[in-house]
Image (cartoon, rainbow, N blue to C red; front, side, top):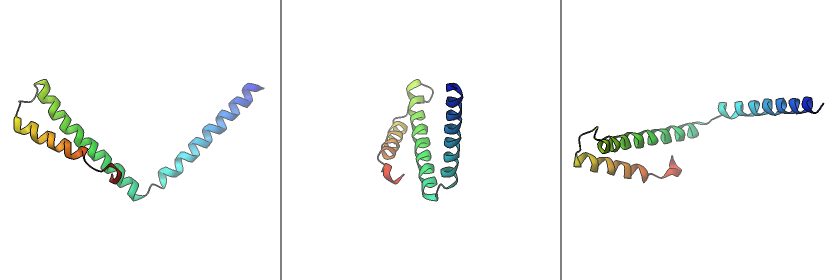
Length: 86
């Protein structure tokens, strides 16, 4: 008896979770979508520039003082972006 009640409760809970997650996905407004896209693009840029510095550190990319300086400045600019606007 207890296991049937437990199973029914878990099924009802699972169905409720599935039903409620479907609605917000369909109602995402443009501002939220744009913000997610902006954050994603920022993280891609951070990953790209970090990859350059990592490649230089590993010796995979030839060391260039100008490249290191430019990459570090770009990372600093990305870090200084206001996260509330993204």
